Each structure stands twice: as structure tokens, then as C-alpha cells.
Amino acid sequence: MPNQRDSAADDPPADLPCLEKLDSPTGSPPTASLSSLMELQNCVSNLSLAHEIVVNRDFSFKPRSAATDSLEGRVSQIVHRAFWDGLQEQLNSDPPNYNHAVVLLQEVKTMLQSLLLPGHIRLRSQLDEVLDMDLIRQEVDHGALDLPRLSGYIINTMASLCAPVRDPEVRALRDLKDPVELLREIFRVLGLMKTDMVNFTIQSLRPHLLQQAVQYERTKFQQILDQHPASLDWTSAWLEAAASEEAQSDSPSPDSRGPVSPTAVLNRAYMRLLHWDPQDQKYPETALMDRARLDALGQQLEMLVLEASVLLLTGAQCGGSVFSLQGFVGKLRHAIAALLEGSHSRETDLKAALLGIGDVVVQQVTDAVSSQGGGAPPQEDLDLLRGQISELWKDNHAVRTLIGERVQGFLQAMLQGGPAKRSPELPAPLRLVSAELAELGTAFGRIVHFNRTVFGPFYAPVLRKLLFPPGEAENAEDSR
Image 1 (tube, rainbow, N blue to C red):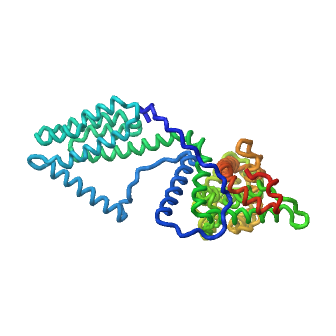
Image 2: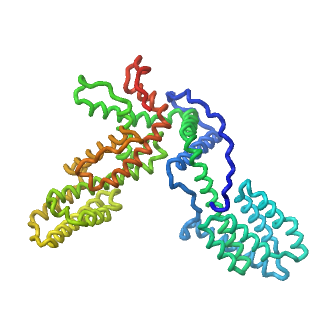
Image 3: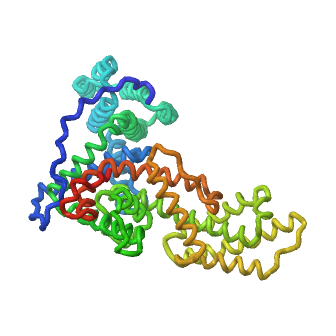
């Protein structure tokens, strides 16, 4: 934020407890008291907030306002209108009654003080001097309160503290002459400035949080696990399912199977999160804070697979001559993406979208061939292409399955390569959506890398029990 270049350094965090108890005890936890439940809720809330700040680079607080058409919004409007109407009556009375105005000035002073940094020593002293509430009350008693003068000082102070984005709103305050309207707008803009300050503080603390985030999240999760030992049950089931799948895929014959790698199991487990059934609430506890992000990536991935499938079918049916035309692929992709938008939630929506895509593809192919002076493609070929595209709603469609497997292999290769290594080469059918897929893979890999770094000590004992017989666990490969 401008004019607030100095920032107070936070005190170093207290020593964090080491993680010694990582296995989840068996049995049901005892009935929790209200205080312990509230403590657990606060712990989960703090953990979620810290995780969101670290993982989401665009995280910021936004001013909260109830929808105007909601009950809360209507009640809020009525209460606020009654308050400001009451203030208007007091100021219009003869002589003016400044009781409520003095209370508001005290609140304005408090809000301004909350925006000051430790280095604002002179400004803090000046604020205490000008908005001396004892002196203001004496002026009210003697009928000498100069409200315009105080308002002018408040606006000047706000102008010196606000972020550039608030400059127009602060300047607009100078044009307001009605004292009630002016006070109301001062409160509104101060509220926005407080939100700006919070977001500025978050951005300033993010490097510090990144350094401490791993140990902080481990410690907070351990506190949750201590109070609720069953907090790893769904995580264990998730890893067990992935281990079973990995063992089956490694070798179809039980006699020829070798030891399964913990890293391979974890990578497969993370891939499962991209295809998680929305109705399945038994989501692994260790990935719960990233569920919304992973669900969104899964939806993007599904749309990319469908888009690449349509392009593959179109290219196979129409040949490379059409695809080589300048601007053809870009225009076609734009139309496909627009029609697929919002079609992931219901099968009927996807079917309708694919029917529309089939018509658009056929039309654009026909137009492209005509623009080159060629004859119209055979109708039976166009009908076949339209039919093939309309059938892509089926999960077991051959082309959709092929593209899905290639995408799966690409993402797994990215996970195996690690966050610092170059992305693997994309297979031929997916090169047309390479930029989007690479971006998706990078975002997915970032989430996975951070999750494994934080929760590796919790995964290790579960994987040892799943993959290694008793006596061999101490020689197992570490999962981190």
C-alpha cells in the first residue's frame, strides 16, 4: 500500500512441537466437550486460512455485504436507514444534538488508528490531538463543535493512508456537503481501506508464511489428530485403494508382482482426486483443504480431454489439409470450449453440448473446404463425424478413453519428474491443447508437492503397513 512503506516485523514464532505420534489409534474417540469442540473448530479454521493464504497466490479478503434480495440484506438496509435517519433528525434539531455524531467520531478515530503502522508516530500524535474526544465533548456542550473542520481533517488523513485504488473515492468525499451523507460515506470507504490493509498485510507476510507453512500445518493437523484419532481413516482408505490399483496395474499375475513403490502409490492416489465422485463425501482428510481446487482442475481436465477428442476425430475425418488452414484450429477450439462450458455437471447437458459441437464442426469444416475452392465433403462423412462427436459423452468411448489415458500418463510423468524439472513431452493428440494442459499440470503438481511435503510423515506409517510385511517396514522407502 502507498504511504505505508514501513511494516512492523512479527515476533519469531514459538518453537513448534515435534511430531512423534503419527499413527492413528484405533477405537472411537470419547465424547468431546463443548470447549474441546470449539478449540477443534478454531484449529481447523486457522489451519484452513493459513493453507489458503500459502497455496492460493490470489487470495484476498473482500468486503462482505449481504445480497439485497435476501432477508439479511433487507433487514440490514432497514436498520441502517433507521440509524442514519435518526442521526439526520438529531443534527436538524434546534439546537443540533451531536450525541450520535460524537460516538461516530470516536469510531472513525478507532478505525483510523487501526490503519496506522508503528512508524506513524507523528500522525498518531496528531490524530489524538485533533480527535481529542474529551475536547470534542466540551465543544458540544458549549455549542462550538466544528464538524466540517473535523471532517476535512479525517478526509485528509484517509487520503494519506489509502491505497491508490481508493483515491477517487476519497476525493469524492470532499464534494459531499450533507454531514450525514458524508459520515456514512466515510465509514464505507474506511471499511474498504481496512480490507486493503488486511490484504496488504497478507501479501507482506506470505514469504514468512511460506517458510513456516509446512511445520505449522503438520503441527495443527497433529493437534486435530490428537483430539480425533479417526481423522486419518479416510486418508488410509484412499491410500489403500490406490495401493490396490497400483498393484493390479503393475502386473496382472499375483505371482509375478514385485514390491510396489510408495511414491507410485501416492502419485496414483493424487490422480484419483482429479476424478473423485462428487457424491462421495469420504474425501481424504489430508487433501480436504485443496478439494475445491482439485475439483476445479478435474473439471478443466475433463473438458480438455473432450476438446482434444473432438479435434482428433475432426482431424482424422477431414485430413490435415483443413487443419493446416490459418486460423481454422483456433476458431474451432474457441467454439468447442464455449459450447462445453458448464456441461460437466449433468449428463444431459454434456449430450446437448456435444450435439451442438457436432453441428458447429461440420459447418466450419464445410466452410473451410469451400473457401479453398474444393467441393463439399461427402454428406455421409459429415454425418459420421457428427455422430462420432455426439457419442463422446460415453466414458468408454474409444477416442475419449485413449485421450484420457494419454493425459493420465502426462500428469503422472509430471509428478514423477518433480516440481523443479521440465514438463514431459506431450503426446501428438494433445499438442493442440498443450498450453492449457501444461498449465493445469503445473498447478496440479504444485498442490501435490506441497501436500506431500506437509503430510509425508502421516502417509509414511500408513504406506508401510500397506506395502511391507512386518519386519520390513523399517527398511521401506520413505514416501516423501
